Every structure is written in structure tokens, then in C-alpha cells.
Image (cartoon, rainbow, N blue to C red):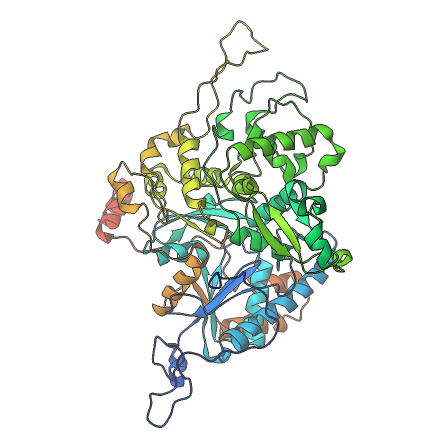
Amino acid sequence: MSNVPGTPQGKTSFDPKTPTIARVASTSSAPIQSSPHYTTTRRHSLYGVEDRIIIDPGSRIWKVGFSGEGRPRDVFCGSGSSESPLWTLSRAADPSEEAEQERMLEYKLETCLRSVFHDSLLTDPKARKVILVEHALLPLYIKDMIARILFENLQVPSVSFASSHLLSLLAVGRITGLAIDCGHSESVALPIFAARPLFPNLRTTPLAGARLTSHLRALLLLFGTYLPPPTSLSAAANIPAASRATRVPQEVLTDALLEEIKARCCFVGDALGPSPNDTRDATPGDEGGSEADIPPPSDSTQSESDFSMAGRDSNFSSQSEFSIISNPRVPAADNPRGEGHLEALAAMYKRHSTATELQMRVVPPVAQQTGTGRGTLIIPGWIRERATEVLFEGGDVDESSVAEVILDSLLKVPVDLRKTMASSILVVGGTAMLPGFIPRLQQELVRAVGPPPTPSRPSARTDRPDKPPLPTYDPYVSLRPLLPYFAILNNPSPPPATTARAVANVGKAPAFSPATMAWVGGSLAGSLKTGGTEVNREQWDMADANRDGDGGMDVSMDDDRVRMVLPDWTRSPLPVGAPTANPHAQLSASAMTLTPSQVRVSA
């Protein structure tokens, strides 16, 4: 058990480690080395051939290292000792609070970046180019902060911005495919064709690691068991544990403990019965029913603001009711019927779960630290197996499931690219490291695209009783011909493939960790001296000089001028991508589009 890796913790002190290969050369050894993989000297940095620094900044976990290496040198929590992430999806409405948040964020980013060079990598930032792994929806003001700190404080020569989805595909030897990043704040699906990210076809959902953490906390508060430490050694021997069992205090379930439970205890089980998407027995045109009736099928899983509907009819979908307990704002004790629903869900998942309960030693609350030793948290087995069901519950417009995000992105790509994208799906991110996540995602894709089951009792039309019932609404019927072609590149246990395209792709990706896939792609791009859009320090200084030369009359115009130096796919045109394999075919195709008048003029 000593070899089990622990959850990455924040940096508490300066603890440099001696590299495996000496950086100080002796009189009879090789010159100064900067990486165990390449023999380089200090003068190589003048020509840009020094190993580059690869930084993958996440809202919670950072991964840093040198290019050309197979894994990061250091993985740490960006927020340090704080349990909250560096940034969230929402910003303060008050301008003063927003300015204060930006100042605190800039201080934390500067601390992290200085720690990267001085603590983790032990290198001079002035002699190293930086490749920044850019997430698709990274806010522009955060990108501006990171670039300002790197150029003005650390004085790096240049910063390259590369798409994390593209780098993930590059790590598995592909430049075309559909990559989905299941991170902490959100899950983002982005199709890429010929090394060109198709940003207009991007789809996202907030069902990710943060939602799983809040869902797991609510489950443990309701169904977990806590054994406080005994007051004395005689009490520990004489008083049975069952008499000391209580509900889990909220002070025990810290974010660090929940992350450890997710990493060490939780896993993803197989699908249970029909999917929530398969319970579509009504159409958007069905106006029957009252407010207490079953909601329309497009809203089968309630959003964060609709979890208060815990007292609706019991014939509602059981898996949709499971998401009710993920809202801590509606305590079940205040709603007896809602608590009854939760007990029914617990009984159902206990019948369909084979996992055993686990006991974990935890730090007791401050009020209970007068006893001997630590407290014991008992985690039920069905929570370990079924807490991740919240990631696969779809149907909501604003909170699509992980499988629905992939399918919605496939619906947006051109028809002639759908087969290629469906057969080259890559799943990356920290949440995707849960055991069984990728095989379960494959099952959800097949089940969502497959034909819905025939309802045992057809729904009657209240507006026209004499007419036959309307057909079941199926949003993914156009993707049903792609069912034999679905293949996940990094599926550890792929199902038997039926087509040659699926056989050639399914499970063929290298066995890199999904959490470090984007960093490995950045390391490969750095060793090949390629990458995304590169911004030199001269360009940044020139933008600052132009801003100072205008006298600073308009602050917003100055910020826009500085930010236009940084790449932004929401403002700039799409990248050209990889060159075509047959340029003569492109020339002939462009010649065929000429009008007769243009042909006469050219002649």
C-alpha cells in the first residue's frame, strides 16, 4: 500500500530535489546538461534549441516539465493550501469585487509560475521558451495575466499557445479526431480536422469534476456513517462502534478529503436498465398535464436551479431522481417525500451494486478532537460505484451528459466528417481517470444513438384523442448509421468492433494517462520545435510601447490593444491547419469554380 500515489498537494516549502543527472560538469565529464534526455549547453538557448518549458495550467491541478520527456516533472495543486480552485466559471457582478478577485488571482498565478521555474524545474526563465497548454474555454483575462507575468516578471523569451485538444491528439499520433476533456470545472468536446480545431462545433457541459465533488458530498452527508474517536481507551474497548455511529459532520468532508475519496475509492459501474434518454414517451408538442406531472423529456434531468422539485410524482425516472440529492440547498429533512425518494434510490442502487463499503481514517472536527486518535468515515459501496451517475444523466438543455456533448458536437460537424470523427474519439482529463469511465462512456454513446425502446403503454394525446399518438422524439436519429463506427482511441477494454475503421482505431492509443495526455502532446510539440501561435517578448514590449505612446486616454482600448497580441479564436479567423495531401487536386478544384468570364479573361 506504500506504493499507492497520493493526491497532489500544494507546495508548503522550498524543497528542491537533485536531478538524476548532474548539472555541474566535472573536468573529465560532459558539459553542463539541462535534461537527462538531451546533451545541451547554455549557448544553445541563444538559438532556441534548448528544451522548452511545458506548462499545463488547470483551475486546480498544474503539470509542468521539459519538452522531450515522457511525463511531467511536477504535478501540484495550483491553489496551494487553499481548497478552492484558482478560477471558476462565474465572476463577481460588482466591479470592485471583480477587481479584487483579479488582484488575488494575479498574485496566485505569479506565485505558481515562480514556483514552476525556481522550485519544480530549477531553471532560468530567461533562457527557456514556454509552451502554454491552452484550454479551449480558458478566459482571455487569465491568459493575459499569465502572459504578463511570464514576459514582465520572469522575462521569458517567448510564449507559445497550443490547444489542449490538439496536443492530446498529437500525443496519440493523430491530427484528426474528436477530443473531449473532462476536467474539474467543465467537460469540453472539440472536433479537430487536419490539425485545425473546429471551434464553432465546440460543445461543453458543467458536468465534470466539480459537480461530482458536490454530488459526492451530498451523498455522504445523507447516507454516510461517521464514528467519532472514543473519549478514552477503555471506552474504545467497551463501547461498541454501532452505538457511536452518527451522521457525517460537514466539517469532516473537506475538499481535500473528497478529492482523495474520488481518487482512491470511487469507480464507474455499468449502466442500469434504460437510459434517461430512452424514457422519451412524450414530444415537445404534448401540452397535457399539470405542474406536478412528469416534465417533458427534453428536461428529464433537472438543472441546478430545478433540484427543488423533489416532491413530484413517484413515476418519474429513477435516475433523474438520483440527481435531486446533488443540491445541498434543499435539505432532505425539510421535505419528507424527497427523503423517501432518496431512500428508494439508495435501496435500488444497493440491489444493483456489488462494491463493498470502505472505512477511512479522517481528522475529526474541532469539537471532537478531545478523544483518542482519529475518526472513521464509512463509505457505502453503492456510493463508491454510483456517485458518478451524475455525469451520465442527460436531457437538460444546459447540462447535457458527457455522452450527449459528444453527440451534439457530431451533429454540428459536416456530414462527410462524422464517420471520421466518430471513429476517432479521445477522452482526456482528470475525471476520465476514474476506473471504468471510458468503457461506460462507450456504452452510453451506443445506447443514446440506438433506437429507443418501444413504450409498453403508448401515450395518449389529450388534444386529439381520436388520432394516433405522436412518435417518440429522437434527437440522434441522424447519427444511427454511425453506430458500428464508434471507437474510443484510449478505451482500455474495447468492445468487439464490427467495421474495419473501428478495428483500426479502437484502443490503439498509447497507454498515457488521460490527465497528462495534453502535457505529453506539448512535450512532443516542443521537441519537434513546433507548437501553436508564438508571441515573442519583442511583440509584447511593442504593444506596451504603443499603449504608452497613446497617452493612456482610453483604458479599454489599451487593454484590447494588448490582448490582440495574444491568440483568441473568438476574434481571429480560424487557423489554416495542415496542408492538403494533394495540392494539385486543390488547384483543379479551384479552377472548376471559375466563371466563363474569368476563364476568358485568364485566356
